[in-house]
Image 1 (tube, rainbow, N blue to C red):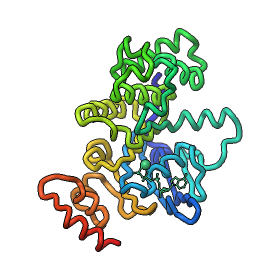
Image 2 (cartoon, rainbow, N blue to C red):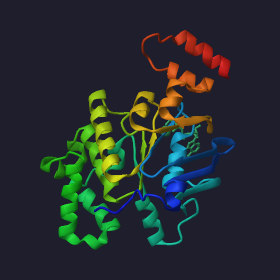
Image 3 (cartoon, helix red, strand yellow):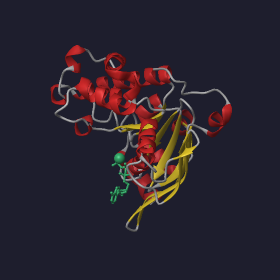
Image 4 (tube, protein in one colour):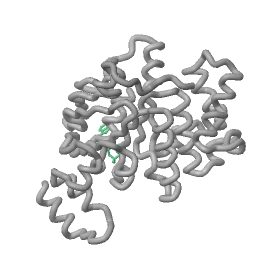
Length: 281
Ligand SMILES: Nc1ncnc2c1ncn2[C@@H]1O[C@H](COP(=O)(O)OP(=O)(O)OP(=O)(O)O)[C@@H](O)[C@H]1O
Ligand SMILES: [Mg+2]
């Protein structure tokens, strides 16, 4: 299925594929997300980084439609999605546009359904025009795309490794033919070699399909690898944003510097990190 997802020119290219403006969400008296704005260009990849509790997942959940914003707007291809969908067709269309991959696919995959049937189910919902033979062909294509074979296709999630399960979760997101994919700590639970494989797979998919990625992660090395632009969140607010390479090599904000210094490596000094944190507070 090859519908053009990265049109050249036109208002959408100028406006960005995903536009988030002034997004807010309060829980009780706690502002979890406070006036967050950014643009994901067509086929681009934007990272959201920040410490635990900085509002990354809440932002992602509002964009995908799992959480209602208190204020602000979210548009995909120029269409507003912060309001409640008016009917089933609209709800499905929105679900198709933005798909999410979570940290732990085991929790998001139905343990009773084999991989092949899980993908078939998504196609039945989002691509009813395919018919049974069309769906079978598409399932095979999706499995091939994420590097899963016949054995995995017939397996239940519990028979798969963490990396394989994450491949299934990615295939399931792709089955909806989305324009934007949100990955929330999608490689955080995987060991480094599997992590590298999944990141490689995601990079290939982005090149081939032109899907835009919103990549939520606390891992700066991963963000550096997979994103073009980055947004740094602290206590629900953006403290800094820009090209990932620039922000990570020459951070403008002390908090970004703190995040970078917190990564263990040569010269890593917990004492200095604690000092920077006290200076920021
Ligand atoms: N449903 C909820 N009810 C109340 N508070 C919530 C809810 N969801 C999130 N929060 C609060 O909002 C803040 C932001 O949470 P969020 O999950 O967005 O952080 P995060 O940046 O994704 O953190 P982590 O890196 O640990 O996943 C936290 O203080 C959290 O306790
Ligand atoms: Mg989170």
